[in-house]
Image (cartoon, rainbow, N blue to C red; front, side):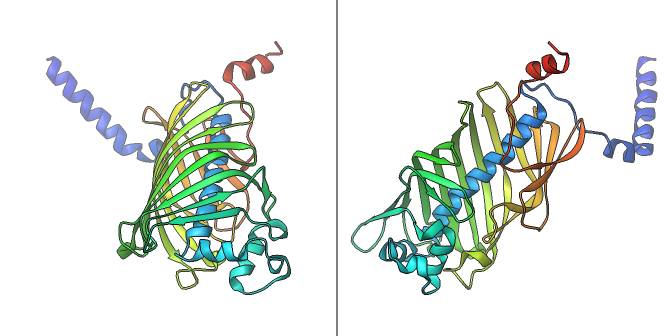
Length: 314
């Protein structure tokens, strides 16, 4: 009798599922158990991904071709950076305010490979877009980027972007036949209030436009897929998955399109939508409390208990 009742219950449940598929699809995000507010986690996560992209763009700028760093070193400090010049010089003038770029050191073995490139931004160099980069990036290249399987191992020393500290490594592997780069980021970010966030990311980045002009990053378009495991010092752990490939344009500081989902223990609690291609710093977050736009790069670290106390007037 129990088996019969169980079977009837299962059949009823399946019928209900068939009838209510659209209702299930429209269910809101879950309100999962986080130590910080969901808004705090989401906005910080978007800001850190933006910071990581900025750091990685610096690496791409000086390793976009095998000669890029040597060309940059040859014109480093040249007044023509401020006054104009050829296409190569212009790209540095346009990237850095007043044409002041980082100090560059290149060390290489006989035959040219492997080689190490050190970029030293000192106490801070301002980009044309107002962003401040400080500290040192060290890039170890095993071979030409045109060699299938060549890698770039990137480490950071006393490095920061807009006051957010970055330590750890990034390993990029070039798969030439597929015009694809696999990226593993094992990084720790330190916010100005001392909060730390460990992020382990595995990405694939496909170069879909701009290949014909390697010295001009402004026409580049990259399509990014992958995921990130995150743990912060407030006691939050969560996973970020790209559910709709992200689009990054070389001429824009921000991700311009795509969507990511955030999960805790397999339960989705938020999405971040980056828009439909327009270059701006506005994204839309959807949580259990609804949808709202926010500015990438601005976050508020707030614990749930503190917010509840503030709302209750305590």
